[in-house]
Structures are given as structure tokens and as C-alpha cells.
Image (cartoon, helix red, strand yellow):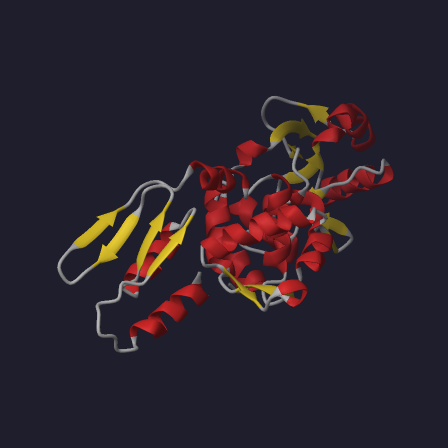
Length: 292
């Protein structure tokens, strides 16, 4: 989109005998794309019925919702396999990606990568450089993408299971819990306050264990509870397991001080959605670890 705008803007600088009206026609044009076109006084039309034409003798401007096909992408891009692509991009925002490399890193199909990249290009957050198999994608607005994803993310996407165990110190509880998960071969990652405290400490220490688990581990919770000496509770929990059906939250976990911790991107998303001082911790984590 940006390259088309620059080309059309250059054409407008060429003096013509007749009034020229450069116009972009596309199946769908994002709100950001429309705003940029208007800023350059370029016309546009899409299949949703949105029109912008600025003539010396007339002015036409109709804004309508994006076509239904684009709305379906917007609703799903922050979930499922598409989210894995976003996650990979945000963890390495300065990298110039070949589609095949991005698909391998995100563990998704080439078609998923193409769909996500098309969405990002429509939002003017990503550029495509070159043509054919040598072309690369560059995410040049990682902050805007992270903000949009955080706005769409909710802790309600997880299924929470509550447990309690008394311990003299929280570190003792956390070590016992994570050792039990490791011994049982259960994939997991610390998130929210218990994860952020390990990578970007903020305020007082964590007193609650927040652990991401794949939804497939639900059938093993009793086994995990016995191994870690936990008891199920309805309130007063000291450990919360957050079961996720999506792969993205656990995909880029890493070890910090011998604990498995969610990626900085996932920590930010979860903290931003957390009503208990989450946004303060999220801002601190973003400044310390992400930098965009």
C-alpha cells in the first residue's frame, strides 16, 4: 500500500493538461490505509462501498465497514496459528523475514504466513521488499501491532484451575510446583506476576504462582496436584493453572533461573489484561525488555 501511495504521489507532481485524479481500488482498505490516502489527497474505493474522491468541483467521501472477508481475518489474527506468526515477528522485530523462514519459526503453514502478512501490510505495519522468492517482509510498526494485540487479548481465553498449598516462602512453593511439572513431563510456563518477577522485577515479590499449561494437561491436574502437594480450592488459591487451547502462549517459552517462563511478548499480553496492577507491570516490562 505504501509503495502505491508513493508512486501515485510522485505522479501528481507531474504537470498535466487535464485534472488527474489518482485512485486506489482494492477489495478492502484498512482504516489506517484510508487515512494515509486522504492525507496525500489520493482517492480510493473498495468493495465495501467506501469511496474518497477530492475533485476541484466536487467532493465524495463515504466510509463504510470493511468487507466481511477482512473482518473475519481481523477477528482471528490474534488467535490460533495466526498468533504464532505475530509472536515470532514481535520477538525479532528488526529481522527481514523470508516467508519460509517465518513459517518455520512460527511452526505454521506458508498460507498462514501469507494471510497474516497481508493483514499486516493492509494495516501499514509491515512492508514487502523485493519480488518473487527473494522478497522479504519487514515489520516496521511492532509497537502498533503489540498495542492492537493487547487490546484484543483477555485472560478469559484461558481456563483457570485454582489450587492451594501452604509454604513458608513463595520460592519454596514455586520450586516444588515446577519441579513436579518437569518430573511429570508437562509443558508449562510461568506468567503474570510470577513470570514477570523473574525477568523484570517490579514492586514487591510475587506471592502467587500463575502457570500456563496446554489444555491437554487438564486430565492430569489431579496427578500434578498429588506430586506438588496441592489441594483444589474455590478461593484463597496460591497457584492458578491457566489452560490454553492455543499454541502461541507456550511456543516461545524460555528458561530463566531454572524456571520455564513465558516469552516477554506473552508476559506483556497477560499482564496488560490482568486487572491487579497488571498494566503498571506491563509498562515496566515493555520498557525494560521489549523497547518498542
